Image (cartoon, rainbow, N blue to C red; front, side, top):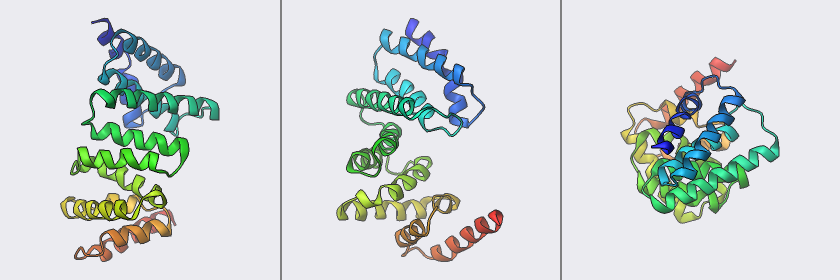
Length: 209
């Protein structure tokens, strides 16, 4: 009961981070402190996941400017929480995806980031809301993927193109010419995909000019 009450006090901060609402550093630190207490009282997977969301959000959100040391500390704590939570509750595609993001931020492209990314796909393969972040992580980690992993990921990306009601997020994931080459390669066998990507990318370039 006490743990739930402490965790509830952090809900507004977690919502602000998810929706990119204005959130002061003091409010964020207070929310993390509340979840520290909640985890101490009830060290369950759910509590670890809640705290990892705040810690990762604090480290990765553009709305805060932590020192390099503080950012690394938050990321490492988030990684520890995710490992603890996933050890007890591994069928969590969202949490595996967060772990991949955290490890990418800590160490750059590597198998340490790729492994949880693939676990996220394994545990929630066709959960479409996760795929915009997944595609970005696929592109960021491409150099670290093995040949077999690249083939697997490419099949899933093509499948999500087929299932997605719109393809805006494919274009949104493209930040460099190399990204564009990879995305075009992923959907090379999909009817009309190249033309649609050209249209979407042209629209974005016009908005920036």
